[in-house]
Image 1: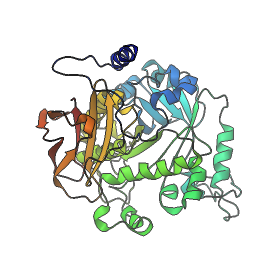
Image 2: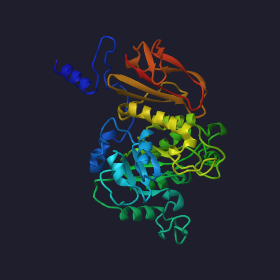
Image 3: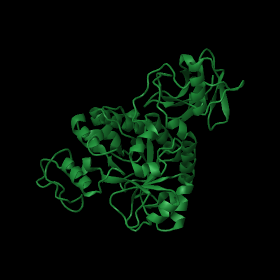
Image 4: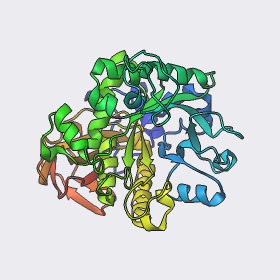
Length: 423
């Protein structure tokens, strides 16, 4: 009797109240769990993040890269697009505006007027690329200023990371963050890349702009041995998170991994922009592969409308609308996304993620890298096989379940579906 009462109380605390039409599903399926860092509770060790609500299960970091916030209109536009975090800011940004609007920031140095909004420090961006894996002498220069490593060999990336972190305030109330690129993803062996990913940070990321970098697929063929059909795809963004998860696990200590997705033309050499469905697919692939936050690259250096503030530009109204809708979905699903995933293979040709929250389980699905498009059958785990139907979120439809499985169609490489299953 006491054990049944404990289970009932646990379901109530999880937001699950049984009814005749929607009985509760136990929150613990008899499946292995995906390793994770602990979800929102991870941020409880950092007083600044905790104070800004990062420990709230309804909070999921959705950021924008290197913005300026000079007046109320700026922050209003950003909040209206569903952003909640600035990842680096220009020197002329007004941190009081950011703070008074409930937004967070990760910055590369203390700013005038800094306060509760600053939840962490950005150590460096892409030091793996501009300085390389090594303990050589760092001159203090960045690319375009002079030679970073003097002499050129050995590389000096580890030295640069240590030096830059030492320059930042100490104390432990704010987390340390760094972003990497093709060095840790392509150019470096795991042992070298792991020395960037693991020693310096409490959260980290890597940016790879698969849809818009003109040379990236050739490099993927060289370093990853990918076939031409495997790039560029939305699923490639999930592969970045996979690589970071592998590197992050090397020291036995896990940290949140964020995903970068570009919104325009990240380089003048690019021949195209990313489109809205590809953006959405890239975000979903990253989430399915266990990204704990999304950062949008908001700069567009090529194309017909160059800008450092793409989401605020009328000429990118279509992309802004798509990003706003994607962020609305993330915000709605945040309590689900912030739970630990289960390991289950729904289909051999799909990338999937399984989570349970509030009396239901949620299946996120899209086609694997270069997998076949069209109809696929998803087989539910035994504890969910009694479900009669699944609800397809954001699509206003349901699908009948027959013998513990259901079909659905994926008409494009970036197409995704989110299913709610309540047995």
